[in-house]
Image (tube, rainbow, N blue to C red; front, side, top):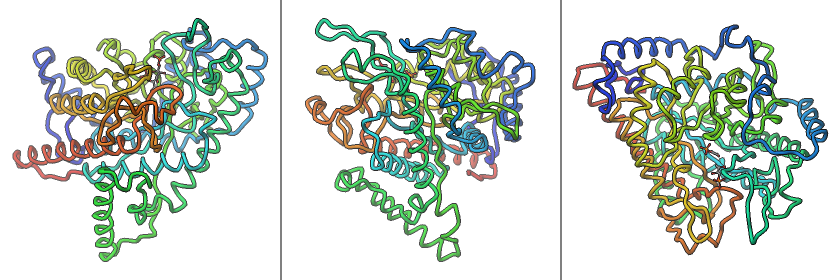
Amino acid sequence: MQCGSLKASLGTSLPCKASRARVSTRSRVTRVTQAVADLQKAVPFLPTADHLAKWSNTSWRNFTALQQPEYPDQEELEKACAEIASYPPLVFAGECRTLQERLAQAATGEAFILQGGDCAEAFSQFNANRIRDLFRLILQMSVVMMFGGGVPIVKLGRLAGQFAKPRSANMEEKDGVSLPSYRGDIINGPEFTAEARTPAPWRLVKAYNQSAATLNLLRGFSTGGYAGLDRVTKWNLDFMANSEEGKAYTDLARRVDEAIAFMQACGLDMNSSVMKETEFYVSHECLLMGYEEALTREDSTSGLWYGCSGHMLWCGERTRQLDNAHVEYLRGIGNPIGVKVSDKMDPGQLVALIATLNPENTPGRLAVIVRMGATKLREKLPVLIEAVAAAGQVVAWVCDPVHGNTEEVKGYKTRRFENVKAEVEAFFDVHEQCNSVPGGIHLEMTGDNVTECIGGGACVSELDLSSRYHTHCDPRLNAEQALEMAFYVASRLRQRRDRIQKELESKGKVVMLY
Ligand SMILES: O=C[C@H](O)[C@H](O)COP(=O)(O)O
Ligand SMILES: C=C(OP(=O)(O)O)C(=O)O
């Protein structure tokens, strides 16, 4: 685990203070040196024949699959899965491999991941404006973070497939009536009726179609001119124009615009793809196994199988057991993957899980997405980082500051912006203390002007919760709160960059920070 970019002259990694005594510096440095050498290869994920010997796109069926719905009509389910299996893939293996390269850069500090979107996409909220507004917000946040941090931002939507939800309880009770919990629109409906809550296979096909249409629009936005840097001043969402964050964004966008004009005067080609297009990837939790299996396809160029429902798939906190179906499935597909980690994760368990999911220690293959609340994170994350570094494993560390901060206020599930920000602050502090790399942020957020999370500059109060509470599951940061978070992350990325630069200068090393 090293501090700073590979292009910066690398020093040795300092151990976390918490466990400095346990691992000898020499062995750690040897492992880190090996990991860095691996990183420089930038290879695609290519597991050995041994690793894949017992794996197939259906081998997950031999393991226990948690959080799966009980369909009353199995035949209908099989029909829906067969139909999806006959449809085209939603993403392509080559795109997944490019994303893996980007994540490898995030693991070394040469890029930073912004992963965000709805808690659960909904059939009833599906329209072009909502997709555009989330896309626009992600572009805005990226510009803010890129400007502050001086690193490329890997844009990764929780989108075009984020439909299935794991739940704490199988049943929900209201006024003495007990019905199956809502598990996302791909499974059942949010309305509290027996009919809506019965898992229905037609929903899989509808989710596939919605994902395909969403991706189609996103591809258009990414490459059709909408995301061109010459439009940076036009991405503010209308309702944000007069907010503090909106104004701060306008100021920053003007500075970017001026810099672009200067570069243009120097000869920058405004029609180059770097200026006109952006890379945008989609991700979701790999949860509903029948759907994932139906979209698992063999790549003719590499012979590997890919989960073609999204570029990156992640394993949830509730389904990441080593000997269960989700890990079995994910260990064999070629996509970059993520794994959610709460304070319940033990360091030895994490090292074993990483070894299973990324046996060749391929850079960019794996993101560890931590979500445990600020206080627990300050205590537990250093130990996890140290264990992973001691094992010489390369991962991109990503902070999900929302899932460890859910509470109930006046009957609404909500999150307080100050707690969410405190977790991000803790994440950056811990990485600074451990001399490791903060690789990204993962947010449940929306481009809509909702009132689901309390606080922030948006000043959403407890009393406002009922006003525009539209999520079907967990509360999302609204556009203003998300942009405020982007400014905070940008400030931390800048701090980190300045610190590394000073350290290197003081050692008399050549400074070439990204
Ligand atoms: O988004 C994550 C989970 O699906 C969600 O937090 C579960 O919420 P629950 O504890 O209300 O089931
Ligand atoms: C369910 C989710 O997270 P976790 O697995 O961390 O609870 C999620 O991100 O939607």
